[in-house]
Image (tube, rainbow, N blue to C red; front, side, top):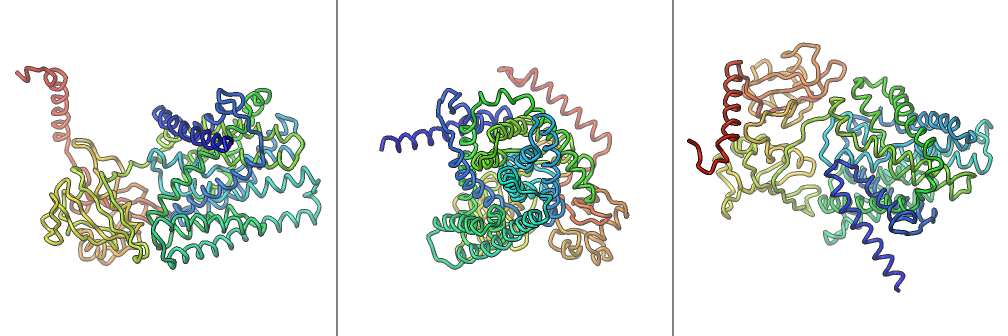
Length: 609
């Protein structure tokens, strides 16, 4: 009994203190996952904690469980739009890219460590994939917004490349332990069949399981608190069944989460929040455990050559792989460089490093230690600099305005419909237009407006005031758009961020329909065009991303341009006013006088002269 209580005490204490340490470290920009990993090392046998943990079997079991939960949450949050934007480049990176990275790193490991070829390429396979947890959370934790195609490529690559790394690791473990000869035709065919079954089986079981989870959530009448537990349990069932069938359970659970997250279902908010919390817990537990597993004193003898492999991976192997895989997809040099830099390694390489140890590969402890050093180097060097790299590569977008307060209520019988209540911010776009004139997203209906405790269900033409509570019926996918409407657009007197738009529309949309919805003053002949045709008529054939044209008091911007065609058009309902030089001079002069007044007069208790 005392032993069980001590386990609970130590586990809860580690998680609690690591969270507090993460909160403090975030103020200096440290990657949160690095903090969890370092905290686990401090709690280990070489640190002040003195906890001895060297059970690789338990680490593999817990790591599999945690990674499955993380990938399920990643699938829930991956939209169809992300798949459409980045399917080609992400799949190439997740397959050919992992193989090429593993081969290049294997060559470096062979030279720096003198490993046998099987062990050298095994190390390459272990660190060959980017880490979904590291990428998802470093891109989203601080609200970093990237160009849509760049963000989609990074997120989708990290979500689907783990199965390839796992397959390569298991295949090379078989070569190292059982002496399988890949040059032999029968062994090569066996490996090819294993690969096809891993990928295709994972996709099949994930799709079937995902729709089974969706049907169960929508058909069963349960307490609202049970739906998230049901979804998570069924997702793990899909993972375990697929693994038992010899296919990739990690790919299957990602696909199951994707299907659930992109179809209407009950308890959307509860499932999303529960999955987010469980994914956080899984990551904290996974990184702490991997930190406990390593012995820092064992890293010292191999530190320098391991850092050499890490730098080779970051500065040579990853860039070469990205250039080779992305050249057919028309990424700009800056976008390619940024995608190359965000090749983050996290807990997955450490988790994969336990497989050779469990399988009895000779020198496997060294492979595990080298993988650990590579992960630390990646999180410190790349993870710490992701925001700065995004600005340098010019792929960062302005942050979206966020609502002051938002309350959501799922409708169990509404199949994805939610009632959302927003408190109107003093700097919200709503204050510039009446509710009945606001371009609300499709499928959104205003139910009521409450002011000073009095509910109003009509007369919306009178507009709203700061502090009013607006209640609407909408769908989950429209909530980010509503966030932009109800959030503070900018501080008073602050210039509008370059490139910021309020809505993103498809270029194939009818100009007449858009004009009627958003109150645009198109000419009669322009109403017959699509938005793509309208933009080309205004801006010419050689349109560049970011090109803008004004229609009355509204600006249309080319957000996504491919092969000369405008695929997406941004709508800026509150563009900065065009100012002549005299007006700009007057504004700057007033700002300078205001600054002088604050400096010399505002703090004087006697007030102004």
